[in-house]
Image (cartoon, rainbow over all chains, first blue to last red; front, side, top):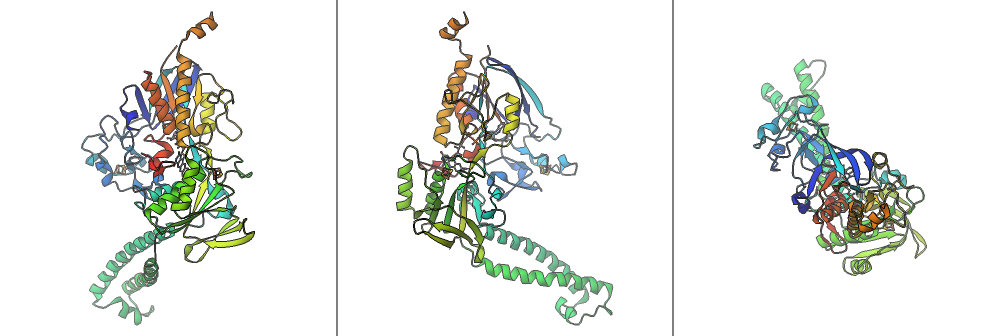
Length: 449
Length: 55
Ligand SMILES: Cc1cc2nc3c(=O)[nH]c(=O)nc-3n(C[C@H](O)[C@H](O)[C@H](O)COP(=O)(O)OP(=O)(O)OC[C@H]3O[C@@H](n4cnc5c(N)ncnc54)[C@H](O)[C@@H]3O)c2cc1C
Ligand code: SF4
Ligand code: SF4
């Protein structure tokens, strides 16, 4: 990635979008919108001083919403370019309020609230579309209760939990526990706020809230006493709730019994009939890494079959089974319901024993389908190319990387679901197809004459 | 005939295409929608089948 930022022949236009493509192969006219970052790319050193005191927290989608970032942010720590960006939907100044803290903190003077989008026109010979994919939204499968059960997560969310730079610094904390800890923190803030208020009343009256409460009669109380007791009535249930949550939190432990559900949205006639190709492998990988993090971890991978088709993939699968406490169970999980202690309970038929089984786990990970990216229709319209019936860019089997318009090629998951090695191989092929478009060869000259 | 290249999308596929073209001597414009390149791969902890770090 670093090489891209440094290569003298590459002009990196991040935070930008292609808006218009005219002309034809060899002479495309392309219009790119460079969105305002409100930070000068040439001045910003990526130091991060600006974000330290930014008062605005926003859900961090790089961590799949399991942590927060500031309104001025970098997409991730080692991001290229490292230029920070102000989120115009959340920044106080850009929302017409007062702030500007980041501007004061930035020693490079890079913050520029007046920055506007820039339009850049390019003359281009050939185009490669590599806009990738998005993961299927498992909320569309009601029987898996993804939205209701906190301990049912997607494989991408789980990648972030496994990562040292993720929301839990690589510990596999359960989302229900994280939520409870966050609730405790919020309640503690509220508690200390109320305690301060009560202390003021107590000092003034020279009596404890408790003693006043015991003899309190609304009819004879002064307005001040009434307000005091109102606060005290807020305070009592809050402390009870906090005590209960705190004692629950003592039992919190990292997730050690994991279930992976395969083909969530893939090979499912309701959604995508195709196999997404890489999800069996990423479930095995995640189970292996989880076991590396904590030796006591066991994983069950539920699938119709495990598709480990690729160089060295089947060996990887077998090794996972032998060395990383992974069990492969042939089944299509029918339902996930909530069990005691927020443990998701899987209801499935064990096809080998021909029995319906209910089994509970600490955490369930959904291997969601590789779905066409958002905005594929718009992109196709801008480029003047067609999509296939699933929403990926259309290609022909004879020329698998050529789109329906000459001089425009596609590679990676914008083409169809594929893993990284295959994406890389396609990318190199697409590059060579693009070069063929702009190179005048003797054979081409012969054709013209 | 113009020889400059446009690559749309800065995931692993777009990065690889851009580097190949740039190494062959072509000028490449790499357009990425998000503030940084990397795509999905940048969110991965490690990658199969080698379990190397993704970034
Ligand atoms: C949980 C999980 C784990 C995985 N683990 C592995 C693994 O271990 N090993 C492996 O080989 N594969 C793995 N994969 C598969 C891997 O993610 C893909 O093979 C790979 O990311 C595909 O790369 P890509 O460049 O085609 O697409 P993407 O990574 O999706 O990149 C596309 C890029 O294009 C940008 N973009 C989109 N639309 C536009 C637009 N209109 N304009 C400009 N830019 C745009 C996006 O922001 C993004 O940066 C995993 C997948 C998942 C879901
Ligand atoms: S001006 Fe906006 S980005 Fe800067 S510190 Fe304030 S809220 Fe954050
Ligand atoms: S790779 Fe595995 S989980 Fe993914 S769709 Fe194919 S069979 Fe299902």
